[in-house]
Length: 86
Image (spheres, rainbow, N blue to C red):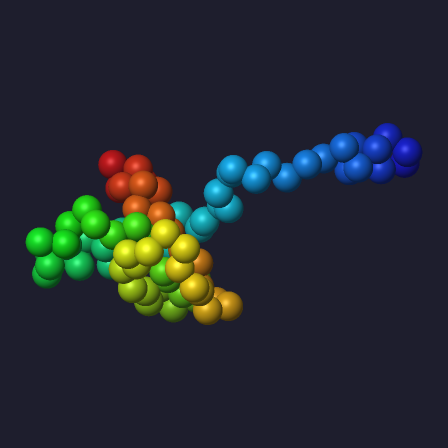
């Protein structure tokens, strides 16, 4: 028991590691982003990511680095969308 408590006390959560996102949410965010790029080709590459609802998979393309999210939403950064699509 003591060893288990000691391991928990020594554990530190990495600050630079992004939270894990469900692959289905990343795929849905990719569809939202690439549809947006098809409709607005002049804006391609300027977005920072997609704010998406984890349950309904509805979302919006975001252009700021620090988006304000609703409780059921998560932010999928553009680099994560692009790395998952290839």
